[in-house]
Each structure stands twice: as structure tokens, then as C-alpha cells.
Image 1 (cartoon, rainbow, N blue to C red):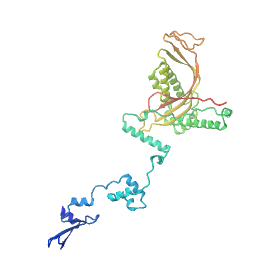
Image 2: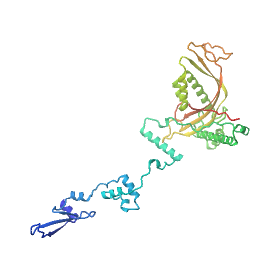
Image 3: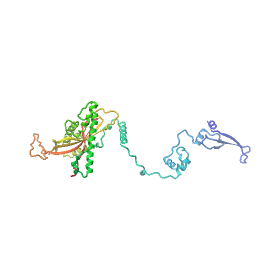
Length: 399
């Protein structure tokens, strides 16, 4: 092995005779001059014979492994002196020399910017944010295979809005003409969004309680006029079944709140409204009995704002229903009463003069008119009931 390395390195033996008195006459010394590969200067060794392969590799720092890595700090300093010293600028590509590294470390460089002075992150567009959400959903499906990423709580409602009268005769009710014009424009935008949301449901045959089936393309032009009647209170419109669903859900939910049925409350509510009703049910005294009654409907139930969004983003279509998420702002103007009885069954509520005691010992309470605006939610890919998720309030206008 030593001979092969010696031949490869181009060893050259030279006999030299010295007449120095320190050496005996005729003494000969061997000087070996070895040129290790073509990357290092000549290495002179005396009286050691031909170097071995291991010694040659060690002296020349030649290895088949990848070059040594340069620290981030050294690299940044070298990059700062790219214009002053070309050798330092090429430090990353020609690493391995300790002298060069020390030289780069000793060079004066500008201090690195503090983390607080770093450039702010680039603001993402709406499309980029949606793409990130889709990627997060796909990752969630891979990590949590037993969980449903589309069944997680929804942080906020869709952009349902509460329209208010904005005709020419109501300008005086607003603080300024600009405020009135803003409300008028908002009402028109809400109507357009209502129509588009209804057309989405019609195109997917997903209108609650309405089965459109397969319709020829030329007959679908008439859908525009029907979709525009989202706020209608007539019984022959597409929203009639949804208005009835809202009233039935409202009645059942209030009865469950009065009776303290926590399980029932959770099944018909979501998000902030669920937390509010659970708080009310928890505050009810345990020694009292409550009974809620729907006495009548003052004005017809009305869908004042409707929003539909494709929320199910899975690669495959859902096994049930549609991909759409529906949020409907419902106006409920009703007349209702709440009965309250003590531990011995005595009535503690206000009783109207004409009230008569019932055979079961209860007596009616004085009814009151209540107007509420509630957001009704439905994930159409689940075979689950509609739920109320939020309550909105009608702020009185200036006069």
C-alpha cells in the first residue's frame, strides 16, 4: 500500500553526500521529497522512508466525506466582507482551512439586526389564507384519522346582517345622510347575497323541505325570481319550510331551558348562544319549577338574512346531504309566558285576571311580547337538527 501511494504521489529519492564533521566520512543521508496529490505544498521527511496511505491522507486533509460545515456566524461575517476579500467571500465553498476560519472570525462585521428589527411577515391574501386552512385540514385528517375535521366548532358566524328601514321617509331617523346611505347600500347588498345563497342551495337541491329534482336548464331561469323572495313570509315560497323549522326549534329550546334540560340545550344550540343558555339554566333555583309557553306569533317568522358557504372541503363528497354550511338570521316576534311555582306548587308568577286554574293545578301566566333575532345554523352534510348559535340585537334608530 505504501509503494502504491508513493508512486501515485510521485516520490523522488535523492542521494546527498555531506562532508560535515558532525557526520562520519562517507555518510549518506536520504531525503524524501513527497508531493502529496496536487493540492498541498511539498512535505519533506528525513529518514522515515515512504509515507503510508494513512499518513498521506492525514497530512493532506483529504477525505471522501462531505466538506466541513461552516457555522452561521462565520458565514454571515464572511458574507459581509464579500467585496473586501474574495477568499473570505468563498468561505462556504472552500471551507476546511482553520487559518481562513480564524481570519473570517477576526474580521470586523456589522452587528446582526435584532429580532425586534426584523421585517414584519408578509400579509397573506384571502386565497392564500384559505389554502393554508385546506392544508391544515388535510394534515389534521392524516394525524387524527378517527376525528372529523369538518365537525369542529365554527369560530364566527357568516356575514349575516340585520337590515333596517332605509326608505326616503326614514332619512330623518339617521344621524346624517351618509349614515342613511350606508344603511341603504347595506340593505341592497344583503338582498343580493340572500338571492345568491338561495341559488346555491337550489343548484345543489339542498333547500330545506323543498325537493326540486332534475330541472331542465331553461326552467332554471325562473329560480332567480323565487330566490329573490328570501324575506317573504308567504307559505308558497322556498323559505316557508325553513321558517317553520325555526319556530319549532325555538319552541323546543325555550321549553328545555325552562325545565333545565342541559342535554336538550346542547343538542339545539352552539357556540356563544349555547354557553349563555347553559348559564341561565344553571342559575335557576332548584326548589322552583318553571314552565314556558308559546302563546302565539305576533308577526310571521321571517328570514331577514341568509348566507351559504361551501364548508366541507374534503376530496370526496359527503355521504349525506351537501357540502354547504347555512346560516340564517331569523326574526321571531312572538307572545310567550313563563310560569313559576314554589316548592308546594303555589304560583309565583303574575296571573292575569281572567285566568282559570287548570285541572292539574297550574294556572296561566300573563303573556308578554318578545322579539328576538337568532342565527340558525345547519351543516348540511350531517343528519342533525338545526341549531341556534348567536343572538343579535336591534339597536333603536335616532329620531
